[in-house]
View 1 (cartoon, helix red, strand yellow):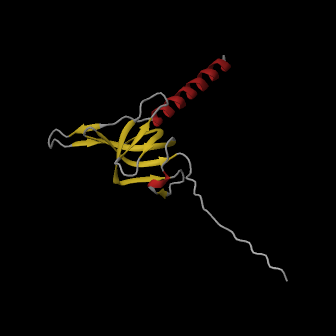
View 2 (view 1 turned 30 degrees about the vertical axis):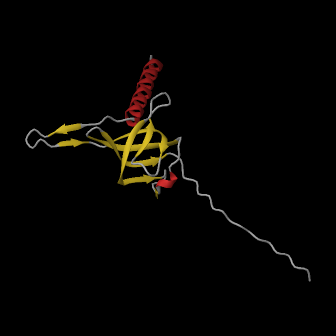
View 3 (view 1 turned 90 degrees about the vertical axis):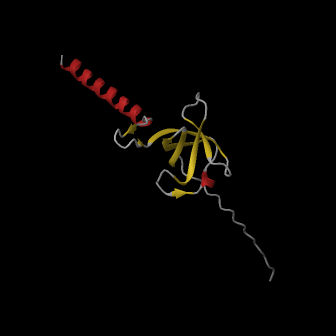
Length: 138
């Protein structure tokens, strides 16, 4: 009797943890309209996925939330920040295709505008060093 109760409690705990994980993985957008002023407020949402395309001279990235989903256009502004997993700000040159990331965005009209991109992997910095060795005979 006590083992059955313990199993039920543990199962309920695992199910709650799984539901919380799914809820945190992709949030829904909350848009509210003030009935008095008529202003629209959109909450920032986030989703995890993969950056599929980034072209430096454009104003958007293509982002895929699931391997079988079609990529979606996410627009960025000069205020969009990119951070590595440790929270350090990195430059746009760190963005590469097929890079996993979490995107924080808001819906502005029919556009998805990115506020912050958190890269899932640390950026790799390649430093080219050239060494010259000279030998002399005495």
